[in-house]
Image 1 (cartoon, rainbow, N blue to C red):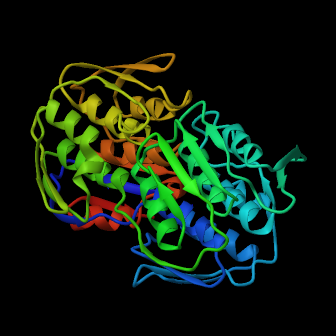
Image 2: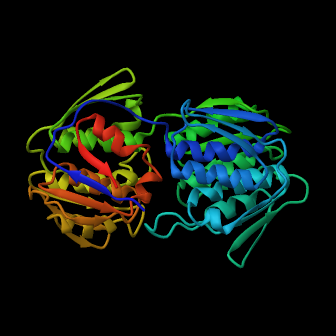
Image 3: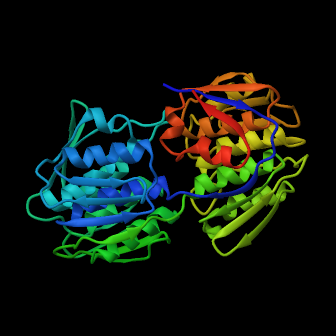
Length: 418
């Protein structure tokens, strides 16, 4: 395992291109299972999670070619011969569970290990299974696996999600496109990644309306065709670089972004005094010496994203004044706090609320990335810390940020991987 060494105190300057979205490519790869033939996905980030999903599809019988230079994946799903997603792959990444919907729709049967991923709290798959059951599948759970079967084809249904889960919305949507009749998903997640998946499915011949709203309607079809699709930019990577520019007092132009996807982050940074200007497909962020404290409460889209909470906690430790961060999505997503406190942050946790006394200079220290976004928060702290910071367990960071240290180096940061 590697470590990042960071010698902080350098304002970031220059431009950075944001990669394709991790949270969009994973369901899109799973959607390829719905067809027979070769689908082509473009602007694919070279991430550990992407390689894990490709390995999972390969274990099911897909033939995959990943051109990391062209950022393009060709997925040939002509000969899917397996319906079991094994523990050793699913255990490392929660998004692996997204193959269940497509396998069930195409093969009539799917057996998937209960998922793993970052240890940020309870994320049960009961909403996924509730949706499959409503579509006519029989569900059995045991020995660490979930198995779903259907005689004949799935049948369209009206499905209400108790919580607007992104994964459940994606999984049910993919199952419904090959079901008989019409399916309505109510209280659906509205994240941009849902819209991207629906765009891919429509290009494959599916009939989907309402993606991006809380009610999605699907009219099932007999067969889908392979398609070509370009992945949307990663709004969380973009938000992370926005915070990096703000914390270091830098001046950074982010290219390949969709500003509408970043409204909650942009609004909070502007509230803190950061100068942000938007252009077509670009955002420029100019930091300042002493940003102001703000309060944040995470919510499902279009609210402030939980995937940016850790990074903003780092930013607010740097900002002047007292801030409050309330985490409403995951009950265990403050694990980065103890590591930030090792660097000098003054944060108190009360349940799902963090009270942050800002304006305390970060000091370099040995810290550990406890999960993907926690790792990003520690990098941000290290970029503006006095002395050197050493971050271990950076495999978490590699799961969701493509060539993070190379992009930061290009902006002037003193960071290296050992």
